Image (cartoon, rainbow, N blue to C red; front, side, top):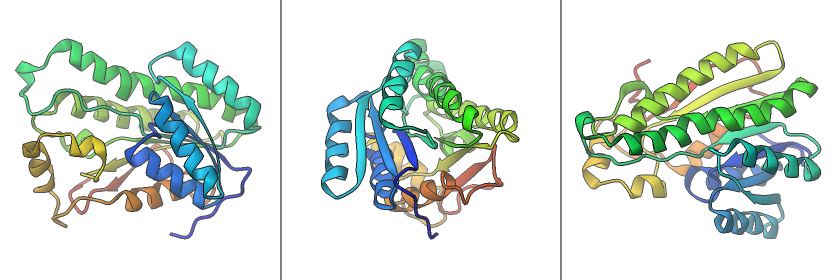
Length: 252
């Protein structure tokens, strides 16, 4: 894919302190976009923004808890002072919760925590972004879901259920704003080498990787390339869709 951005193309990235979010931020900045690195890990987001700036890119950082509606609006209001427009939102915030357990063993408090970040938080930040995109009739929203949201992963009830819910959220929102100049899409990666994946039990990683016909994990660079195109002006006739990044695992 050949993608480039003007410096006045402003992208907010949640979960930007590490993993896929950090890779997306670095890549988008390298392609010319101005990126806002947002994460509950304030120090990590600040380090990444400083790294991008030191490399000649344009970036700023802020602490963001996606499950705090008032806090999210406050952060986006502060961004308004630095970014005259919000052109794209890339939501990489997500947690797995407890894994490698069967459904009857799931702790409801843990399920609620995963739901709060992966699904409720996705709606909260989408609402904040949409309030800024609607007046100018342009925007790109991308939520990072998971192949687990399509197929389900054994031992990952909370994660699979909330990522499936996220895909449903995207399908609905895509239709809501299809004539408003705003696209809303999802990305469904299989196993990508991120700190989140590395923290999983080896049995869970082996289970997921065994299902990939290419017999390998995806790379952060591959995900970042796809993300950049999806949130670019070039991706203009696709909305409510879930892009696969699964090494052949996806069947629909």
